[in-house]
Length: 180
Image 1 (cartoon, one colour):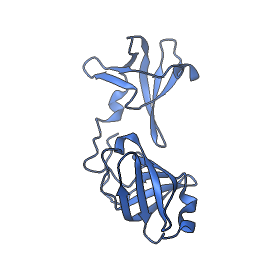
Image 2 (cartoon, one colour):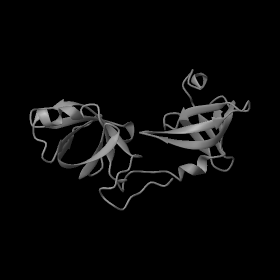
Image 3 (spheres, one colour):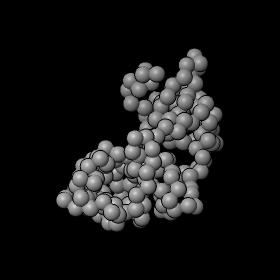
């Protein structure tokens, strides 16, 4: 699935910016703990969607400040008091569209059929499907024993991709495969 949207206020649940962790200050600002992808690459923000009770709700941004590390302070238009933003704590924050400078790789469905190997070159299985979960893509891998294994598609787990040989080398945390 190639990600990109032309409508600037279109919801795109694929691009998780982060999670609101707390109120910041007294004028309705919130602190967003950023996803690792955005800690060094803050896009220009005019609007975002907050996931409230499982549904995307659009908000226009009046101010934002990034001071480094992994925290971004946001203020929303017409939300200028602590009381108005308290309900937003722990909400997920999604971008409304893919920022131009955000580096999306190839079409994710192209990974279907790739063999997944551990770093010690042990075959885990073959990717049979990619599943979009809120905030996280999952690889559905079929093992040689026909067992289904779900592994998060996370950049920290991927060590290399051999496009020619259709192999994905992953460093999967110990015990994660056994959870399936």
